[in-house]
Each structure stands twice: as structure tokens, then as C-alpha cells.
Image (tube, rainbow, N blue to C red; front, side, top):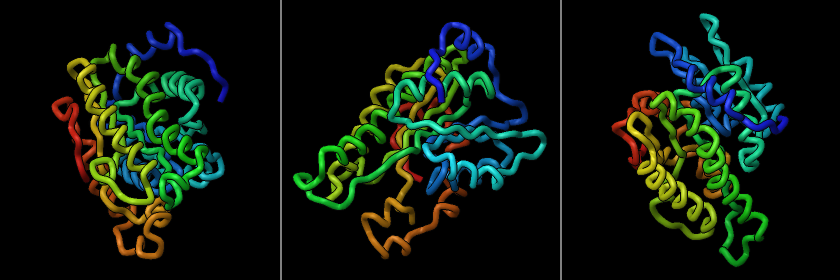
Length: 251
């Protein structure tokens, strides 16, 4: 994606943008190409909502596209972007507003985890990748999308946290640190938002994903699958309101 500043014109377009009728929502999901993000996108599309999906992998987006139902002219938007890039997310915001208007709900789902290791054995580059993706990636979205939500005086932001954002575990200290940061960031930003907007930290629970497999190995298969999780998560996310602002929730 090219990096073009949003500018005043796009802010004006954002202010004029409105939600689609009939209860249909525009939901932006980062990290949409696999795991929880993919499962959530499929479930929301099945329910008639518009999905705006982001991923670093164009190939995985291409494989997802045919599986997204688009009834009644409800067309989805899938875009390649690295959430770690501030300029990339700035351009993402510009394109999303231009093509779909301001999202009603944003799910900051993109995330990664370090390989199981004691902190002194985790390479600096790997630690940076976890923090840059899990924390700075969310900050980039907040920086460029909250100003677009403000004129509408509505919008829900869901930051994916973890049980390890509320506790600690050996061998995954960088990941735990990043999710504790997500919890703190969410609670702090909640105090900055005006009435009508809400930001929450959401612990998805323990789900059979690639990230869980990297920690638990073969025993990860004992936990629920993303598709089953998405049934509950979609309902929960769609029913969030401004009254939930600042909450730390669990699916």
C-alpha cells in the first residue's frame, strides 16, 4: 500500500460517513488471514455484516475471499498491510474511509508470540517483533482511526488481550508483557474517549490456534477450535456498547 496522508478531506468524508442500515455493521479485523481473525471474519460475514480485513499475506487474503458470503450486495474489503508500520496504517485508514467509510467496530486481532524461551534466551529481534506487532500495531490503529470515529460520536474498538495479559507464565515473557500492555493501553485510552465511543480489552480464552501450538505443542488440539469460538465471540462483540468502555472482558 502506498503511504498517502489522510488529510482534512478524508476527515470530512469520515464525518459524513454513516453506518449501513438494518443493523448491519462494518467490522475491521486485523490479522484476518488465519486463526481467530479468519474465523471471526467468516462468522460475521455469514451474519450479513461487512468485513474489512487486514493481513500481511496477500496469498492468505486471496484464499479467504471466496469463503466470505456477500449477499445483498454486501461486499467485503481485504487489504494487505503490516500493522507495525505507522505509515502503512495511515494509508490503510485513508483507503478504508474512501471505499467503505468509517468502521463501526474495529477488532485489533493481529498478534504474534515468541518461541518458548527464558527471557535471556529470547533474541532482541524476536522480542521487538512481539512488542511491535502486539502493542505498537494497536497504537497505530488507534492513532489513525479514533480521529475518524470522533465526528460520528460512535464506534467500538476491541483489543485482543489474553489470559496472559492478566497473569504470568514462564517461557513467554515477551508475549505476557505485550498483553499486559494491551490491557493498560485499553484502560488508559478509555479515559480519553468521549461519550459514544468504547474501547475494551478482550481475552479470547484458550483456543486451538498456531500460537497455542507454539506454546502447548500437540496438546493444543485439546482446546476448542476457532470456528466454535467465533460463534460466541461474534455475538459478544456485536453487542458491545459505549457502556462497556474500559472493560476487560473474556469470551
